[in-house]
Image (cartoon, rainbow, N blue to C red; front, side, top):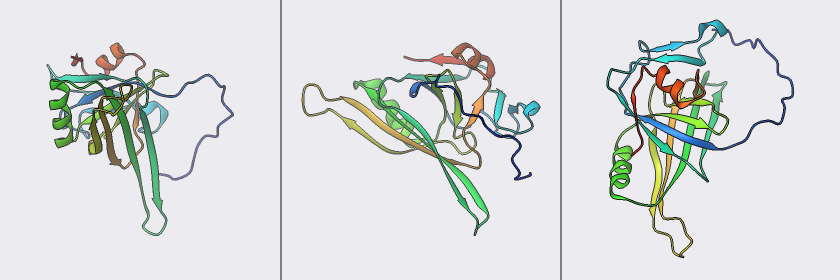
Length: 187
């Protein structure tokens, strides 16, 4: 792999918005990152995923988001060690507590799922593609005052050799096709 860059960048238009719309959670181990992931080789590098072959009858779990949610990647590079890795951090708030979500939060804390992040710009990324994402912090809160948030705040963290990969889709329907047609479960 060459370390030389191959493109520059012009100043972009101001036509995007921030924030996250949804996340889609895949239980870890549904796919083999080496054998079941297809990349767009036309662009010359493995940053865009065009297909992930999930097993037949798989489920992905959709969580709708509104409000204070974020997805950030921190680059850590060491000239002394010759290493670079990318720490992916997803912070979400899920409003209102219920028995089903309570159990799912517990199971998410025990596991290390792969998480697809959908932005408000209809961009899709997969976080924790190889190693998964761990719940590294969280609270279950009832608030103090009548107007306080009651629900769940979670932080997922993953460390990967590359930034979160783009998925070659821009709608939930095209995401389902890219993932070999799993069932989307949202309740």
